[in-house]
Image 1: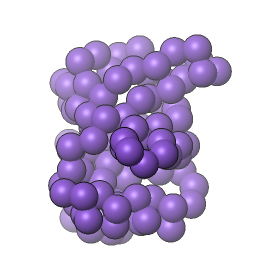
Image 2 (image 1 turned 90 degrees about the vertical axis):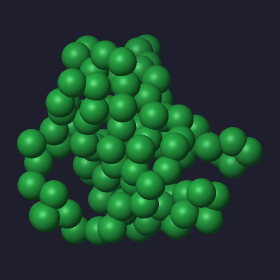
Image 3 (image 1 turned 120 degrees about the vertical axis):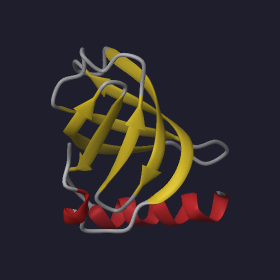
Length: 103
């Protein structure tokens, strides 16, 4: 299991839909974001085995536009997975702030 003391930013609870997109955009896995921060997120999904280590993380947040981040799997246990964002931490910080306002 991950060392939660090593997180670099505060996580905010949420309940948002996300698509984990891989295989050149030809494959998508639907998941739910349980919490998010500037550095990453906790997601839950039915079957994460087919997902590669790196993928596009597309946050579906109607009525707002969807938001896409490049991400990697940090850890995985049964139907849960820790995701680390690979670029633009400030971009994710803005998303975490918007989630906080909506929640």
